[in-house]
Length: 143
Image (cartoon, rainbow, N blue to C red; front, side, top):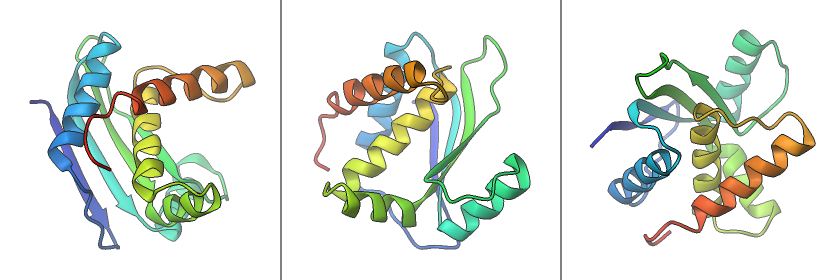
């Protein structure tokens, strides 16, 4: 199985159904015609992710995810995906959905970025949302 790891930075957070989530991510990447070399998901706080946003992207805003693509062409995808659990919880509450559903949406959003999908233009955002929904519907594990 490809190397997919989950870390916590400054918070305590354990993802549920870790093996099933890894299989779902791997299946998504394979369905898109690629493979995983190494993925690290780092769960953190709003403040931690804000500092990363300021330092590396020169943005002074809160966000739910920042994806760093460390891939080399032809070798599969490699990346570090930072996810704010604070944002996940707030957005889940705001949209009245289970926290796990929001977490999975953000996880697959980061993976899709590594696969080359963008979300800056309305057209790109529509395509990204379609792909997120498509792969979220492919989950076969309890959330």
